Structure formats: structure tokens, C-alpha cells
Image (cartoon, rainbow, N blue to C red; front, side, top):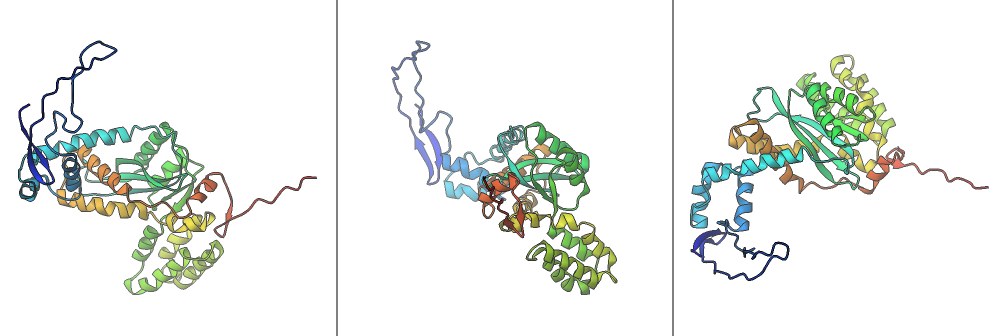
Length: 356
């Protein structure tokens, strides 16, 4: 065959594939088989390592127009590094995202879920659009992206549409859902999964409470709020809520009301294993993941179409998912799904039945 250049990590190498007289015959059709090299397929112009690294560099901030000046000297050639080549990657990402959002969920059990609406600097057709994200904890304790879709202002209808779609594909109602105070999500949760318990995010709640207070009072109030969610158990947390109300209720009733009105939802995590409390009281799994996404979308300054933007966000989250660690004491997740009761964070053993 004619020699062709193949881009590798060591530079461009000219490869001449030998001709092969394949004498094998297909038993089913009786026709001669055509030899195809697994090492060097007919379409191959870049080694597998190079093919893998290009989308990763794009996802992590290298603009499509920067590939040639950044990598030409390193690879020894600009072949396969044009902006058009890199841009074609997004077509595959869009197909991957579409397949992900249509997959069957009946075989997966998400015991806990975190929900949040993330606002990014990408073109989602509407200025007030955002990305609705669901991350779940499987029965084995591992975290996994459940769904990712664009929505409008975290509205109840946008969330309900997403959650109805998950239910249609077989998703079982989670035991506990964690999110901020956005009314749209909780309204949708009540409609689609009414049996799921609610847990408000303490990070969002703390920010909302402190915003209703003058800066001079914020350091002390923040420590008082931390005493609530870091309490030894629910009884101590309820005492800390009363202390916070007594200290700040007279001067800042609006700030105190933000906690007392949602007290049950803010303290719901105390009914679960103590090892899981640190995971369940905030939406940090989503926020920490999307710090990387925000960095990438800031570099791109707009990702083109809505589908291209969502596909890029999906691939970034999918890449980050490999680094997510399981929840503490993952063996307890199965007991939570089974309806086991926990008091003060400890499993309440069922009394043994005396047999006569």
C-alpha cells in the first residue's frame, strides 16, 4: 500500500502497510474475507493515544484554534489538528449525550440524589436558561450522573419534565433528595416522587441567611449556624436552632425565619447514618464538579448551539465522574433503601423475636 503519515506521541511516522493475500473464506457466505489490520486500520492517521488526548485538551480549556501552534512543534506536524477536526468531536459528544438521556434506568437504584440548577456562560438560547443536574448514589455507595438537561430559571415545569422523563425510563423514587431552596425542584419532586424525603442544602441556606444580616453580625451568625448542622444529633441541633433564634430573632427576624420555617427539611439528614451526614447536608458533589465546567465554558466564551453546549458540559461531568469517591460506609446505603431505622446516626437493631 501507499505509505501514509501517522501522528504519534513521538512525532509523525511514515508507515507503509504490506499487502496481504488473505485466503480465508467466510463459512456463511462462501466469499473471500478481506484482511484489515487491527494495529493500523485503513482510516487511521493518528495513534490511539493522540486521538484520546485531543478531546481531553479541548475539554480542559485549549481552544480549537490553539491546537496547531501549541502541538505542531511537539508532534512535528499540524495534520489532524485543524479547528474543523476538533470541532467534529462535538458531533460525537452530542450523540453520546442523547444516548445517555435515553438510557434505561430500571436496572439502577439511586438511594440518594443531589439536584441543582447551574448557570453557565454558554449559549442556551435563553438568557435565563440553566443546566439542571441530578447526581445519585447507587446501592453500592458509588456516585453517578443521573441526568443533565437545560431548563428555564429552574422552574417547576422544567424540573418536573426532567423528573417525569427519569420516571418514564424506570427510575425508582430515591429515599432522600438534597437541593437548595429553589421551589421549582421541590414542587416537581412532590408531583413525581411524593414519597421521597427532602433535605435543604446548608451551604445555600447559610448564604441566604447571612445575606439578610449586616456584615458586622455575619461572623458570629455563621458560627451559630455551623453549630446547628455540625451538632452531635438532631436533639442538639434543635437546641442550637433555638439558641440562634434567641440570639438574632429580635434584630434580624427575617434571617431567623429562613431557618425556622425550613427546620424539618434542614435537619432531615440526622435520620440517616452518621457516616452519610457529611454528604447529605449540602449539594457539594454538584458544586465541586461544576467548578471545572465553569472554567472550561469561560475559556470557550460560548459553545455555539444549545446542543453543543450541553454536550460539552456532559462530557466534562462524565470525565470528572471517574474521580468521584463513594460515600462513607457504602454498605449502609442498602440498609437505607431497605427502610432500616437510624437513631443518632446509628442503626437501630430490630429486637429479637422470642420463639416459644
